[in-house]
Length: 179
Image (cartoon, rainbow, N blue to C red):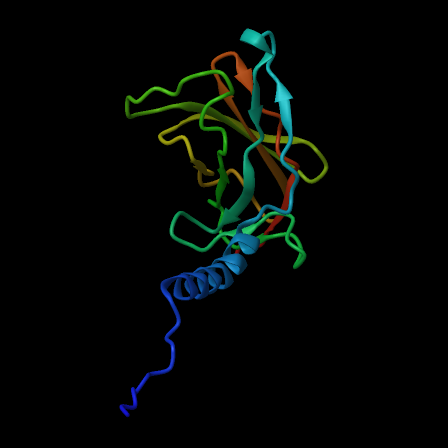
């Protein structure tokens, strides 16, 4: 009589695929949660736009001491951002790649008009600037030297695309403490 040696069964490809998918999900979930905006996404009807199209409000408003400094998110539980530069950079993510029902141009170059509004904490206008974003995803504006002094301010942003425009973001309060 012959005895056959058998090895224990190995897990199949499906088991490996399931384990890999769970591992990827466990790694990606914290990043997705961290990247989520704490502000609700709001859409505003276009002013007399064709077919009353909607354009999403820019998300994740943030501020930094300059173009190469790290950003502080607006609305953070840690409190209002504090900048130590007279030329901070204001930035937002433009989730509005194209309004519903339109086709975005494949041509490279400027796509959206972005309006930045900076006021004192009391609501007195400091500067209002309209720029054209070079991408469909982000917009940034570095305030010119001498625009801000020590004190409390607030800013907000919105995007325009042709006849459509988004709602303003919520005000982002921040403090300037020049050294």
